[in-house]
Every structure is written in C-alpha cells, then in structure tokens.
Amino acid sequence: MTETLYLGLIGDNILRSRSPLLHRLAGVQNGIEVTYDRLIPKELGQDFDTVFASAAARGFRGVNVTYPYKERVARMVTIDDPLVRAIGAVNTVLFEADGPKGCNTDYSGFVAAYRHARPDIAPGIACLIGTGGVGRALAFGLVTLGASEIRLADRDLAKAEALAADLRALPGAPPITVEADAARAAHGAAGLLNGTPVGMVGHEGTPLPAGSMTGASWAFDAVYTPVDTQFLRDAEAQGLNCISGYELFFHQGLDAWALFAGLPLDPARLRADLLTQDEAA
Image 1 (tube, rainbow, N blue to C red):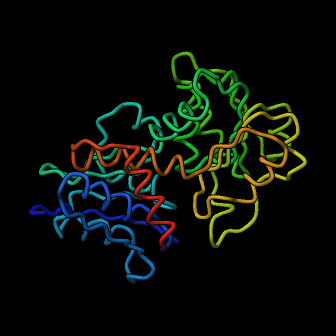
Image 2: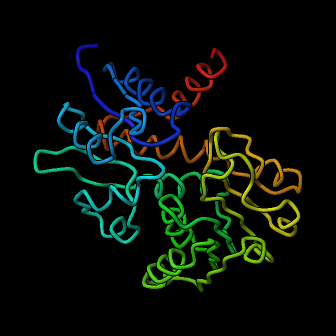
C-alpha cells in the first residue's frame, strides 16, 4: 500500500462506532491505507467548529459527522444537491480546494437498506419518532420510498412542524402529520422508525412502549450500537419485519466511501470482513 487516505468521524458517544473499521477494510480492498480518527469534541476540550476546522487543516480528505452535529455542520458547508439542502442535515463532508462540501449518506443509505430488506414493498403509513438530523434524512427517504402517510412524533413540536413543512413542499409528498406523543402517532401505522438516540449506549431505553407496536408490519432503528436495541427486540417479539441500524451503517458507509475515495467496493466481501472482525473482537 503506497497511498494514505485520511478520514475521521466527529460526534459524541462514538467510541463503539464501526466506521473506522469499515473504511479501513474498504481501503484494503483497494490497496490503500486508510486512517480514520474518532474526533470527540468534549474529549478534545474543543467545540465542534474548532474540531471541524482542524480536520480540514490536517489534510483530511473528509469526515463523517454524527449526533448531535448533523444540522449544525449543514450550515458550515456548501451543499450542491438540492435534496440535501432541503433535508438540512449533513453526515458526510468532503474537504475540497474551494471549501467543504456537504452530503447526506444517511438518506441514501436508509433508502438502500429499506429496499434491500423489503424489495418491492412500499412502507405504507409510517410513524417516525425523532425529527433531528437522522430523522430528517429518514423522513425524506420515506417520501422517496413511497410512504402513503408520514406521522412525525417529537416532543419538540416546533422542530417536527418545520420538518413537516419541508416534506410537504416536495413533489408528490404524502399526507404529513405531527404528534407530540409517539404512542398516539404509532396507532394504526404499518412502519415504526426510531430516529432518536434512545436505545444507544449511554441512552438506554426505547422511544415507544412495546404495547404500541401492535398491528405494525415493520420497524427500523437508526441506532446500531448496540444492534439489538430494546426497540427492535420489542418489535421482533411482536413479529415485525425488522431492519437494524447496522444496515443503515453499512449502506451509508458504502456511499460515503464512494464520495471519499471514488473507488469500487465488493459489498459482500466488505460485509463478510466486518463480520469476521466483529467475531474476533
């Protein structure tokens, strides 16, 4: 290996992220060395803006950005894709000669993960809990996937209403409703989605009582550390078709690699290599 690709991840609570491993393994497939640093502002004693600027100054090709900075960084970059501008959240940044460029592989990764798990099956009525950075990407993905109705559940009604307005502006958008109570929003829904950090390491619990899942047919959790969240365990117990956050992690990682490196990948080999590394850990 003669080339080195410098990447990083900025976020809170990312010590268990598998993104460094995914990108290093992608580099192995292409004969290049990849360094992928976890950059946690609180641990570095710096604010997000300082950490972000230092990554660019240190010669990073780009960074992934995760909770809780996806909406913040969207205001600091140039976004060429009008859909990503509408989403208003960025999770992948490329440091270019004319400044940082923002992309959203949460959106594309979620669409790919859903289609992989449920080919040719529309989402139906979808209840999305959480309307922050990842929630916005999921909501736009649901429109792309042809959801017949989208119910946004968030205790921050102003934030949910802002997302609802953005979704309604899309061509062919389905009916959009807003609800402060997740259980009420979930009643009669076919799909249940967790777009909050609830369930991840350090934020244990579930955003929806198990009893409120009755009648649904599928569930998705954006959390992947751990993969077996309480939300998905409850959904599985009720017989729902479950899509784990690991699938979002994997598919958004494929898309991020294409942006960072512009090099091909064998997805099946990458998935197998990740599993082998996880089993050895």
